[in-house]
Image (cartoon, rainbow, N blue to C red; front, side, top):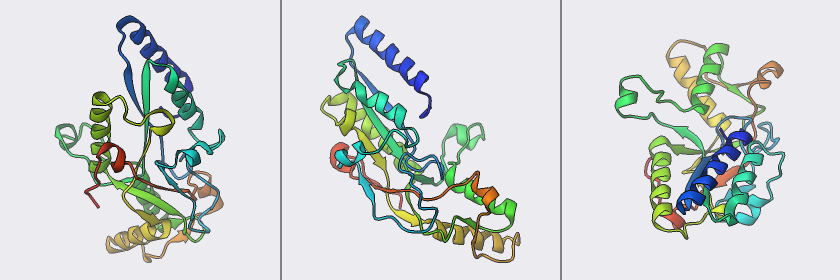
Length: 241
């Protein structure tokens, strides 16, 4: 859990115990939200949909990542993990997925045992369906990064394989990896959702409308955006967009 500090400390404690007993230096890959939920991204700001940010984050610009304050969502867990960089018993890597699109496939998903959907875009669709209008925050100018589900899966595999083979794979403060392969505005995706729901006869207009104050209690907008340069470090290539 990207917010559960006690669980994170327990995992780190277990890795330390294993290192003492076996001498093995472990690899830990942690997931934290780049834009998992409108209000719960580590890069979230207070744009409220009013503007498109020029404040981009790159996973090569470590100094800028370090400026993220402890008040940012998930940051307390990130920091606890990164602080282990000099411990000698674990090399830590943190992956930040973007807004994920596409459906997972495989035996468990094909048999409807596991959920093939991501959270962000399906949530927007469900909200639009319930209110019978596609929704945006403010004018919907805020920018979100995106990535295909198969690409982000590949990133985990590529990073894990490289980290096991090569101890010099960037880790600790250098070990942040943005899973990103493009960007879109909230208005753009809300407009498409509206068009689809109009085609299905569920509502009369495809034009997105601002969320009410009550709806904003559940759905917040305005995120900083990120740029992925990870392929230069671990060999990951985005292929799905």
